[in-house]
Length: 193
Image (cartoon, rainbow, N blue to C red; front, side, top):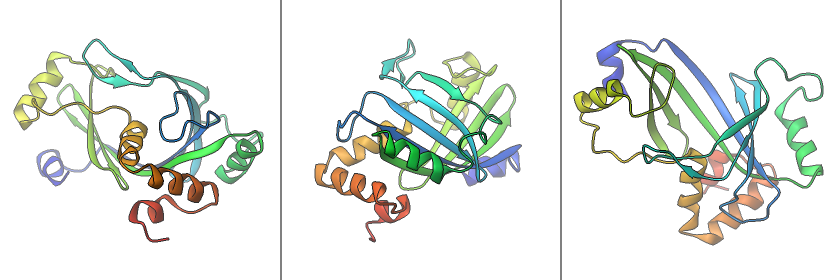
């Protein structure tokens, strides 16, 4: 993170995002379908369906997204995340996970770098060229220059979280119970509740 700032200066954009993941599957710690509500800089931004995991041609595991509500469309029915969460719970959905992250966007030539600092998971870089996430030659060259060419791509953050919990199913149950009782994600990941 600091290496990027020393190379390219301050980010061209920065956001504080909170993602709330809901499911009604009762699948424990790896549901196939999720609804993700995103807050950005304190405001509701989007509601998306995150579908069944797929493997792209470049080998990366993704969850295809379909956005139901986009930036600027919130406010008619739900004014804040608490109203939305209560409504989803009343409809039979459970809050499976909540992440807080700081996303900083850097630019290096034709490659955009989204640096995500995710509470409880770590720091990740998402690379794109020509507004597409891909194995574009510019991305391969960028990774080579930074010595990242042998790093394995990770799947969606939610799946990394579920993998972390899958090593301890009792932690998954405890996390689910606490999230649905209104405890914060920070307390769950630090085990300070």
